Image 1 (cartoon, rainbow, N blue to C red):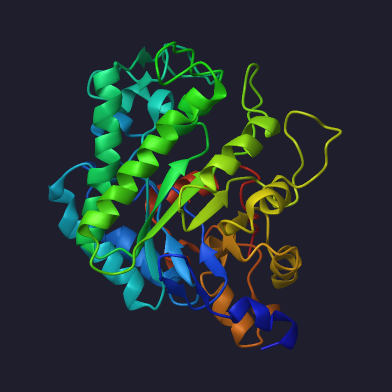
Image 2: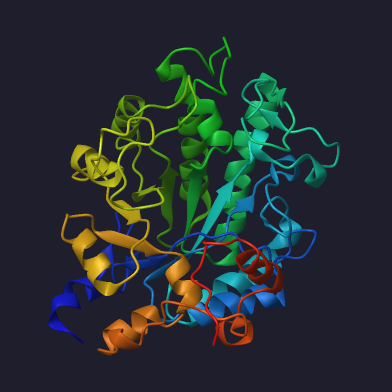
Amino acid sequence: MNKKYEPLFTEYTFKRGVSIKNRIVMAPMTNFASEENGAVSEEELAYYKERSNGVGAVITAVAYVTRDGKGFVNEISADSDEMIPGLKRLACTIKGQGAKAILQIFHAGRMAPPELLEDGQSVSASAVAALRPGLVTPRELTESEVDLIIEAFGQATRRAIEAGFDGVEIHGANTYLIQQFFSPHSNRRTDKWGGTIEKRMAFPIAVIDAVKATVEEHAKEPFLVGYRISPEEVENPGITMEDTLLFVDKLAEQDLDYLHISVQDFWQGSIRDEQDKTSRVILIHERVGDKVPIIGVGSLHTPDDVMKAFDTGVPILALGRELIMEPKWVEKVQAGQEDEIATTMTKEDQQRLVVPDTLWTTIMNTPGWFPVVDK
């Protein structure tokens, strides 16, 4: 191994006692590979097995906690006990290759495609449509329904524990339901769940509390609780960086194992103010990194990219697309073979890379998402 990369291969132990063997984790990426009912598929197991040897942990594609929160075709389900056997196979597959297994859990809220919902009607904090084509105006959740969804996050956590996962990541980012409650664009409520910024924080905190209570009750071994957050929204009104800094102050008090900052580029500045070039990841790390560890992500393609990000003090870095193109990214760096890391793919590489059919079709049909070249 090149000595300059050695710091990336030091062990890290989280607050709750879970240790990872190095500082690189697989980012959560939707793979469209579960069965129609949300059960884990053989195709999905093969995909994760191929990518779970080198990284310290794998954060899975997101799993929905209630049926009306499904956000993607062929998405993992954690909404019923019937899913536990498949989830157990997934956890065993990841852990069998040497990585810790973290199940990401969420509810899509108003971002749920209507064709995936049994009644075609999405739900959210308020009846405010997302500014995205193809989506319907959601129905505002009643207070009792809000309570049921909070409970569902706890039940999904119990299933993750029973399935043998090492932790869960609460998906409070990427415009989904938890973020919808925090956002002044999607949350126009006047009850205890909306209004002031403190009230807009109430739902995310209630979800965290339900998850932690479940861990306390059911986990027999150390079990991680992480939280993913998006720093800003482009909508007006929408989440500002000032809002987020107040929110992460609150999150840092919640006894979380980590905060995972969801951005397209680790070094990306504001998406609301083109003049503000300061990395959102670094801003949050500087604000609360001494209280809760940060996972950084976004366009970290090469070992030097990852090392530069690590040198900022952010202790853990996540790789996404890089591990699709090069499943052995971490192993090659560790073996001193970083010059052999693939940075492109061809249309004939699906079988070699062990990529599920629908994900591969999506990659091939999305220009610019991956560097696809001719042989």
